[in-house]
Amino acid sequence: MSSSTADPRLAKAGPPRRPIRLSWSDERLRGIVWQVLVVGIVGLIVYWLWSNTVHNLAVRRIATGFGFLDREAGLPIGESLIDYDPTDTYRRALTVGVLNTLKVAVVGVVLATILGTLVGIARLSQNWLLSKIAGFYVEVIRDLPLLLQLLFWYTILQSLPGPRQALNPVDGVFLSNRGLLLPFIEWLPAHGWAMVALVAGFVATLFYARAMRARQYADGQPRKVWPAGLVLMVGLPLLVWIAHGAPFTPDIPALRGFNFRGGIAMTPEYFALLLGLVTYTAGFIAEIVRAGIQAVNQGQWEAAQALGMRRGDILKRIVLPQALRVIVPPMTSQYLNLTKNSSLAVAIGYQDIVSIANTTLNQTGQAIEGIAIIMLVYLTISLSISLFMNWYNSRIALVER
Image (cartoon, rainbow, N blue to C red; front, side, top):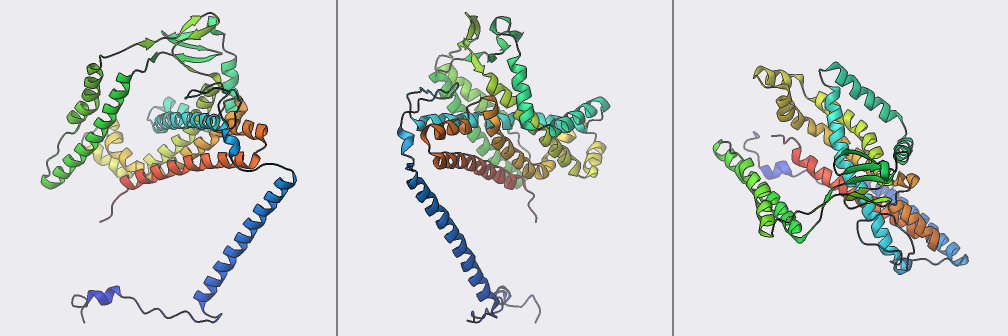
């Protein structure tokens, strides 16, 4: 019988599975027995470790549990994104530590991606000097331990002049041993509503782009998305801001007494940590970007050049979109490394979750709970980054037909 007349139900149906025999010679029975045995042994080991830990803590009269989180911390914290006072609880102190860690991780990922991409492209530049400088940067940065780089940047910032002799490269920007001072706009409710309008405009632009892409697939006529995106993402927030009075009150730092007042400040600890993490991770990202670009077939470059396209347009429109499919998976690992490497902040005095949790467990004696909190925080951040990057990777993956 030909395949064209065969019953498709018969093609899908596989050979009948024989029942499991109660004999050691049955491979499936042996597999089940070994799996149950391994799970049982692991469970017994976990139970022994847990019971032994509880017994030792009881003998030493060490309290267990997370009840200490509601006690007064009495822990001074130099910088925080939310209001904090030493009379607050350990729970709020640890929350400040988590936010400080996220502040380093999020900003560091963005800056490291930008710098690493630029350095990776520069390594492939036809300009000999630019290519060699980028190569020297990558080789030196990747060969030096991160902790040594953090101490180097922190020492450099500490050796800067005081506030009265602060460096002033641009009006309103000051760099001293107190950190980096930048102008800042006083945040008012009008800015909050404008931000909401920006997010709404961004979401509306995504839906509009999807609709225009569907129409292009239907009739083959390309349609421009940027005019609508400009209106939704720029015009709409601007109208909301103007409707609320268009407040604009810049807070420019100024020297008053022995220190600066106003603006937004980056402490030397945070600035040194950010510099170290960004420059170090960018060296690895640069190699990932370079490898991704080189993974694109040379024929893509030649075909685009034959059409008269400029090298920059070829890189932006043809090569990089294809290279992303090679770049994104290893880039995820670098984002995770940057987040976990931020725990070295304790070496230069920046109070992230590791520093605050260590102080908390030293004051309360809740070592197991403190370590568990640190592990849970980094596990949550790492899984969140992995989920987002896996989602993005699936969006740009090639669809086989």
